[in-house]
Image (spheres, rainbow, N blue to C red):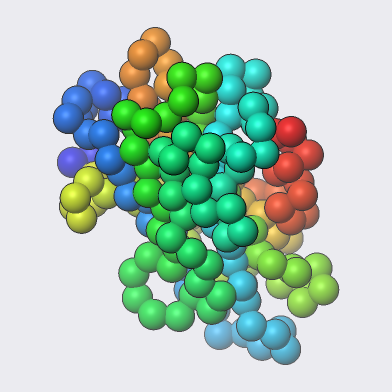
Length: 187
C-alpha cells in the first residue's frame, strides 16, 4: 500500500487505509558474521504512552515478560533469542479499535539483551526492519540503513494518534543503553 518508508517519514493510516484496524508489526534482523563469543538476543518491546508521552501504568509496557497490554490491544508473540531464519524475528499484534482512549502513542523499540557484557551493538546487526501488515499483506516497511556502531537500543517506529487519525512514523533513533533507557524515558 504505502511501500518503503525513509527515516522520519510518516503515513496517515486512517486516511490511506480507513478499514485498517488490526495491524501485525513484524521486526526483523540478521546478525553480521562477527564473533563476540556470545549469541545475540534482540528483544522487541512496546511502550503505550499517554498525551504526556508517559506510560499510564506498567501494564501498558509490552515485552517478552508481559505479552499483553492492559486493554488487550497489543499482543507480543514471543521472544526470538537468536534471530535465525528468514522473515520477521519478533511479531506484535495491534488492534487499533481496542486501544484505551488515554493512549495516544505506541512506540516500538528493539534492544540487545546484555549488550554491554557481551560487547555487542547494532553495528553488528544487519537487515534490520519494521513492517506493518494487514491480513498478511505488507502495507509499510522501514529498513534501518545507518551503521549504529555504538548503539545498543533502537526506537524503530511509532504509531500515534493525531486529530483522531492513527499515523505511523519511521523513527530510527539509536541509544547507548538497554531497555532501562526507555523505561527511564517513559515512566
